[in-house]
Image 1 (tube, rainbow, N blue to C red):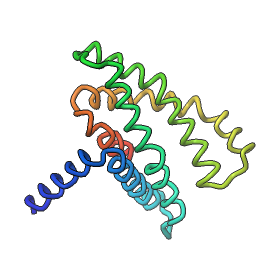
Image 2: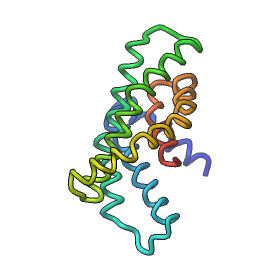
Image 3: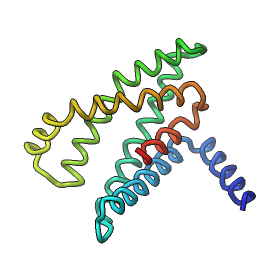
Image 4: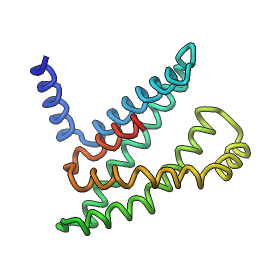
Length: 169
């Protein structure tokens, strides 16, 4: 069994090196879909809502994975050659003040408009009502994840790590 896991890990790393954007997009989509399936089961939904699951997986594939890929490449370029705790703190701060608010807004809009199919006016009202508490809650958890990601994860595994934690979140 451990040999199979090692072989799968090696195959994944080969794909990640050969096709980084595609691999991160697929990984984020799969993890988002799996996360939604678990969330539906935990919430007591009698029958899995496949449409919802596929739309959440699409969000991971088409947006979250590619966004993370380019964000981390940009951050690495911006902080090129800089290491240490101070640099990590700056990366976390930049990510939490830019990408975090943007991503929370994007998800709330996507979920309301696409997944739930609600009209723009309703979604806008819900975002206006809930956004601040969503973002404040996010800032209580994600800076720690971001610190671990920037401090300990190699660049090519940061999207995987973030997607995995997001699927548990």
